[in-house]
Length: 302
Image (tube, rainbow, N blue to C red; front, side, top):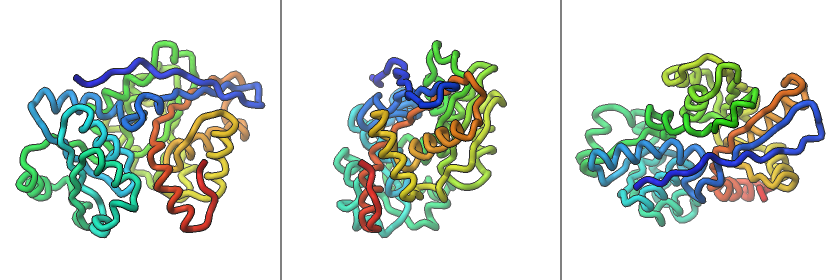
């Protein structure tokens, strides 16, 4: 049976400014490893896999993928074999030095490392057929977990009482989480997405699933792109944890909250606004990022 959770609690962030209110929905507390939007995205995918008699899950991701770690953990919890198709052949000799891959392997995931060129064609019929020949029948979950079933799960993030908020904010990767939020909000609420990647392709991806138009992407806080960070972002993440007891990751939630706080400082939100930020988890990626920061002799995330 796939586990279910109650809606996450909202924690207020006590701001020095008194003209807006900021809360965070602590989806990161759902589960230590299958947390935040990863639980929401996987929930109905796992139900569908069980219903159709699949015993294997296959998915795709990079070396530090929250999604890879979550699928590995969910597979162990619910009795699925898991296969991770990993971008980068050179990583097959670096599993022990990579926190995400070593965790996923310990959870029972089998890896197939492919070149970056081959990875770009991962959804082609020929590539998928080759995987089926190698691994047998499997239930395939896309990179990042975003599909119709994932969006359905993310539509359950907001509770009835969350209708009082004027703005719902979330980090954006593949667009599944924000699509579910867009479908779940009231017509007078606006969803603000903070992409972790550069590029305009997300509008197209979100429009495939979103049923309302009351949303906007804020593209000013990606810090150079996916998995890019700097000392200013690390300093902010450590400040936020120390002052508000909310841990943030450097790929998604750290960038989102940096953006929200900057927009508040600049007066973006009208006086009296109530803002709800969704904590989408992703904290497992901190260890891997800290290893990179140490090599560069930069401050680390506490």
